[in-house]
Image (cartoon, rainbow, N blue to C red):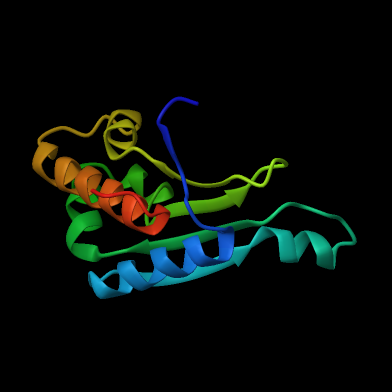
Length: 132
């Protein structure tokens, strides 16, 4: 899928999300919400494999992008999805920052976007148990 980065985790969904959330907080990110799609599906009488979305960010990273083009606010704060497939494999997915920048025709924000990409990659790798 264009613009979507998916990293396979060495851990189950619960531990992957806990590791991600702990690292985000340790790096000064604000956790705005954690949405458990599987729990919501169960509440509606439906089943869904583990699927949890975390919404997070930091105004120091997002604000310069919104100053360049406010429409990126539809994609900010950032999001990461931890999910498990039918074979039991756990993955972590997030939007590539350069893809978001292109989607909103952002210019003159390459440094911010590059920093954001590095941070997202590091968060995902650490949560999934990969060295980064």
